[in-house]
Length: 141
Image (cartoon, rainbow, N blue to C red; front, side, top):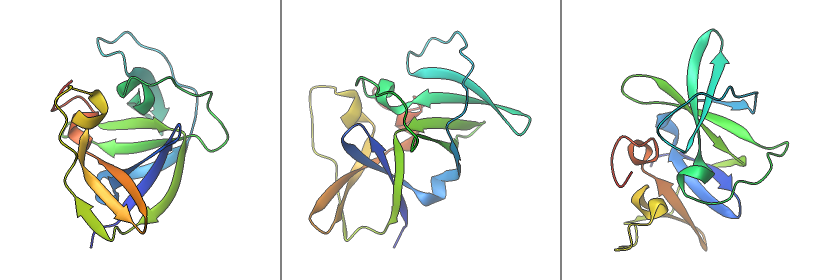
């Protein structure tokens, strides 16, 4: 059984495999940089390394809430670099009771394009993110 980290974004809950996460840090100032992808917020200095940061809300085309005290940056690794993902909260570690395939959608919705499946946790369904698609490295970007 794989462990997942459950992330909060607006009213939604999403999950990433714990094996994809390097670390979770408190929100810190992000320096804006010009970029062709609208969901890239900028960069942070993480212990001497420059790390690009994306907004999960912008990635999904939803209005971003004002960051609260529970906002975090989840540091993940792509093939070539570490990348930060801004989320409203990091809620818990979960082991899903059941893993289901993502719902079929022909609308090209960015959120659905970024899902690898759905996890059932009791009576709750949580969308499991396809990290490579979220980062814009695969899928309907």
